[in-house]
Length: 260
Picture 1 (tube, helix red, strand yellow):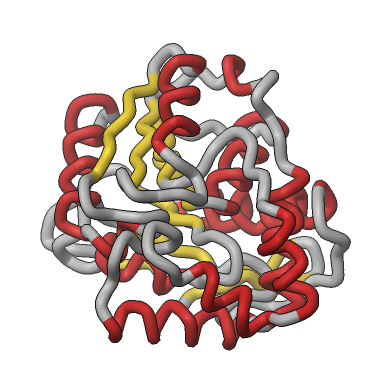
Picture 2 (spheres, rainbow, N blue to C red):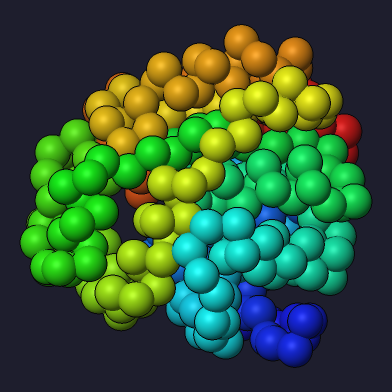
């Protein structure tokens, strides 16, 4: 793992190379996650290299922050991403769920210029249903179980994938994971989305009930240069459940729209 120091804290990230070269992709995980969400993308068979995957503050091996849910937390995560992006000369920002909200924040409210963006299982508004919000606060284990029901994080994942995903949320912990989901719940940039003017891909699992295909169709309809791809037999974490199809979608987008 590599690190960058900024704003009085340390943000960790993993950077990988391969035998081929292309634009540098920076991957941003979602609520309660860490950089390992993107293991199939920063692997040698991933869609582009160099590949960089960040641990947002309070996740994985990055230092903690003490922020309130909502804009304060989103601002902090955006500073994590811009620090890593500048350190690694990132060309493409790729965000899942909360990570997508962070990407929107970077694009709309910072001076970092990306060459392209991928919104993967995310949206311009990320409301979280009341039952899940309550469980996150009162019964974290039950919240984790609800997230791993069919057509949520996964369409119908096998045991090892489910176990690893549950373990990740437990390691991140209730406080940080709940803060993440509440930050998502407050997030809404639908009125600003049309300001984005760069090549974009909105990719989503067909069975994703957390950020359904409709969210991604909105992005494609609102951002002039955005296209959408729906992956069959995949839920919210399509990059884990259908890695080959996910990587192919990214590879095609990069080949067609991003200068190398």
